[in-house]
Image (cartoon, rainbow, N blue to C red; front, side):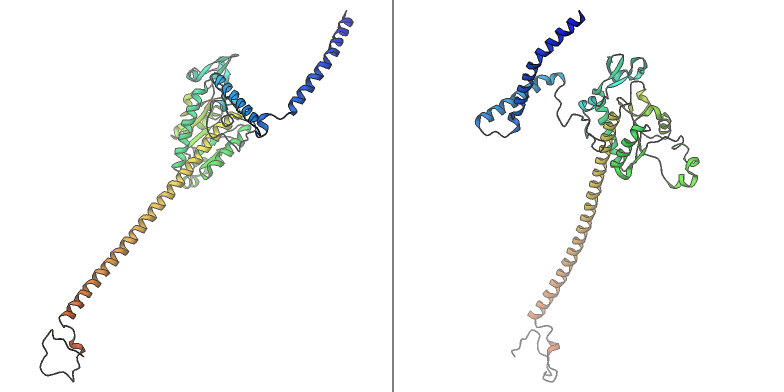
Length: 351
């Protein structure tokens, strides 16, 4: 029976081979023909077909946009995006593609994380990304403001897969960005004289103005030292952590390198924007100071010219008055030809 069944299956497969071959050949011939969008329209029929195709695609997007399928190229996270090309804005689609919504098991969920949980699936907590996006934008605004004021920003990621991310994020901010990728040394903020020496601790100000933690649970000592030193902290908080351990929590999957890459990229770009705004403000202040100096210079020059003009006007009026009344000619008279009697004032002579 098994041999007969095997023969029947082989007979059926052989019968299907010609039909499959014909279908594949027809598909290849259809694929060889250029589509409407692959070439520019050269006739009215091509243009009508192109417009019809665009209308069909637009209709499909409008229909399925209610179900969350309206992603575009600029709002979609692509796996080919490297660390050097971070996403500039926080979008739900990019976070969803990076796996930021995947939390830990429901048995490990922290009770204080309930407001940021969307639900459960396969006994795992699903993080609500509608809360993640505004909190990430709030953190970006904070980083931008601190960079604008000239503050120092420290990125911390002590896992091996986070070392390149924190290094690139600190490099985007420039001289105001720092990173820790190996291990946080306890006492760096609270016991600096013992670690670096009293002279170095007094001369060098090594205290950051903001700390960004990509894996906060592994650096709880750093969080405690920042709390004692009154330094604000930003951290990626997963479902098994308490959001209150950092000052500005970002609910997301802290074990996903893609999520850490997106968060660090957005925050570092915000810091770079703050530096650009600071440079523009400095240039504007320099221009205002230079304009004020120029205005003072031209005002002083105008006052001097006005004083000289008034003095020249007074001298010219005096000379004109003397010329009209015959004054000032005694010094030009010849003493040998002068008469004994004094000539009356105001008398004119013809030479």
